[in-house]
Length: 122
Length: 106
Image (tube, rainbow over all chains, first blue to last red; front, side, top):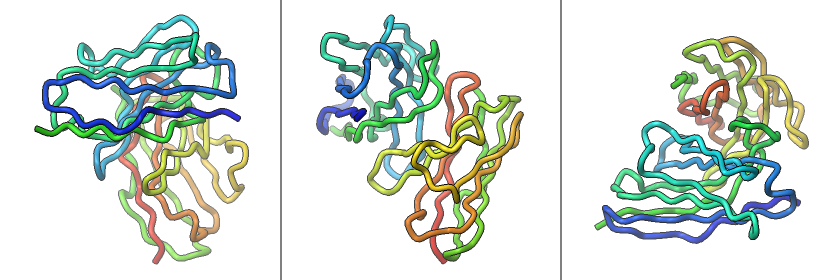
């Protein structure tokens, strides 16, 4: 069965960086893209960006351009999301989510990780 | 960015009621519209994709319709386990979500 297992909770100081991992299993990793979606406490869902696990192509939300980098390690079927220059409003639960279809851009998210809480506080 | 306006933001209904949520896109997105359910402390769950297709394993009381800019999500007979927040999401361009509809039991 398809599973996405994320790394554990993080506490970071403002200005620091965080790198969250998402280990996939139960399917051919390189056949589907991975998106990252975050949710601030009590707020809605915000799409952050997408990476093709096939060729590493990325699309990032404009507001995060320059602060976020998404990568994959196909040898371990793991996707990574790094966010730099953290601010207090980056405090959120971060989810990875798999594309439902083999496409060249993000579309529909059929499997999700369990979420990783990142807290940014001095 | 394509803006998704979802309404209402909250809704209270009784078990057995028919519940409808709407989502309006800021531009034509064809049928590139999905609906998700999120329960507290859990990851979202895909219910409807491509505006009207029921995801495998999702009960048939859930349905979706619409195309272009106006979309509707319906629960035909509300069950206690349907208490959650529901989100629409477009993928015509880079994905964006509606602000969510919190559904409560009356």
